[in-house]
Image (cartoon, rainbow over all chains, first blue to last red; front, top):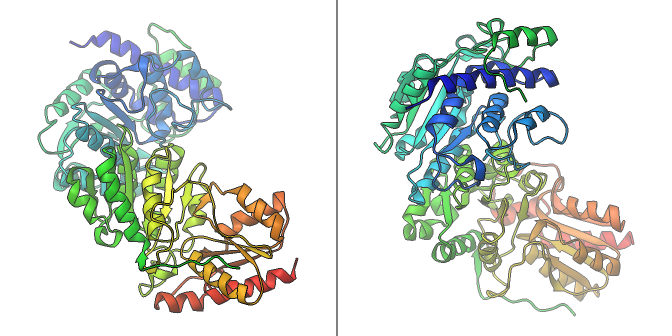
Length: 282
Length: 318
């Protein structure tokens, strides 16, 4: 049984990390990071079977996660650190020279927990499916997870991968869509509408799970648990998860403006004042 | 005296790839293969038939194929991707750059129908920029073997090299003259003929033409040293410098754009270490067109005669 209070406390801490990290270098992507906090905390601290203390690239016998929308690296790094992959103190090097915490995640500097570089969008689903195929060849029953932005679904490669996974019954794979409806230039609906996303995935032959409250830990856990019940049933699984960009910081919500902007000193303090818990800042 | 090279048959280098891949299917259980709807063209049929679980038909979706290959390495597989050179490089450059090269994945990008000798399909399919595209990527190994035997040996050898590799081969049949048992060492040039007047450095289909040129030059009294560079990156600096120190001029020959090809790599080496007159036998800032392979090699200046002319020209500049 999940320790809901503990997971929620961790979410507060991760959100503090996110705003402090991007503030420190006046760059980075807080909006999507804040929106995906519950999801990543749930995945790494409750759902996945993984081995943070002894990271291996091949991850044999472990569940794997691939971040396809690499720009939300702040939440990824914070959750990896707070799950034990590398020292929490290293978060202060984010986006600085000689850091393993590059603006977008990379394997180049051997940061534990990262298995693929991402940043240029649309590539992570193919990679995750490849890893899922390797698991099948290795008779490894673990699950492969991935996360994608909704705007990212405008990339053509995503749909090549969606087609492939269904045609080849890649059923040890759960893709989650951060369905926040916003991208750099505005609302996804206005920039390039995805139309009926659920119907699209269904038409491609996927099992579709909808998580209506992606910033509610209970709902996120239920959504992932629901998704897992379809593992091994002959279809790839997508979890369309509604989130709020900027969730947890009132002035960052309801707008696309905080997709890729960092708070100033005053805004940071205002954000931290809303993120109060059992603080253990790096 | 020019060393005598003979061959019993002409074979296509892509069949050398197919044979090498089939061999790996039997000897290396981690090798997997992916193809984007060109199994017959890439000669991957035998591997597919013998290893159905380790073969992935991805359809006409090359970007996805490169991503799948990158993912398959996570779990210890050694993926060989197969499609035409154009779709193996230019079409998927960003996928290779981020998911394979920058991520340091052990993917072997195997590319057939490179260059003009693809023939009648025309310029859309005749990529002449692929060596340049691939060699610019940090830590990407770039290999362009010259005949069937060398392509087979290269295919087998790259499975034991940990890291991304671009393996380039082609469609036409060319003299199969390298010994079937010749060891393939990545990054190690092969001395085909020792000479004193000029160094001819050739890669891929131009290697046999360099041999033909060497024979004709010998009749004119010119002693050509001929080097087969199958690995463009990492380049065998020592072999080139040693030869050029002796001959004091060089001709490079390749089925590729002059910009970005083998000649560029040689010129960069020589300009830093041993400035030397050089002539380039390569396509000069042009797309190809439809025609037979032989017609195209003649029209675009990639024939034996062009190597001979380049030698005569460069020797005057010594």
